[in-house]
Image (cartoon, rainbow, N blue to C red; front, side):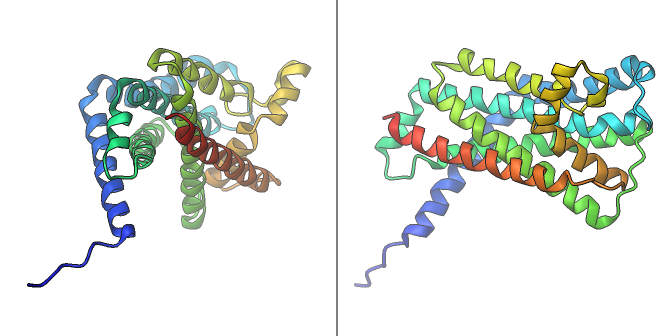
Length: 259
């Protein structure tokens, strides 16, 4: 009788993680109201800023060109907040205890939530870009600059998502995790995302200068418009990597402690 060799641990881990990713993606598709809101809200904000506030804000360039990077980062924040709610639902709903009792890596469910968040944000970001081009967004980026811009957006999304995962793990429930929405969505407003920081009162300008969203927005704006990034690229990259490392490590430690 031929005895089959056991599958390698790496193979089982990849299989388990793939199954949990599939679970989270299917769950996202079933939450139709959340999917629609995550797609419609960024478009509504883009149209509101351009057509309601844009005429009164002077930035030195067409306001649609100025505001699109900010809307993209705001979209990422909203997607991350939804992830915090989903993780909190799993942590308090008993499903994580079930996963811990099975011969699988339960941390794969966190990866599943991150991948689902990346997928949702990819759709929302593509839609925002599409609407932006229709209303006059004039990107002058070369192919390599587009690649760099997309890479920066993806790095920001994954960094913010891992922070959201950590918040969801420690939250007492989905309602508590939803409070993360306010903090994340408020952050871009006190930055260079929507108005130049020098137009703000001194106290807010100082906050905007040290806000991590500011160098990320400035770098993204420079890449998309084909203008110099003026030294903001390195701080933007360091902020994204720092946020990612803090969120990833915190999520792993908190998940292992929450038994």
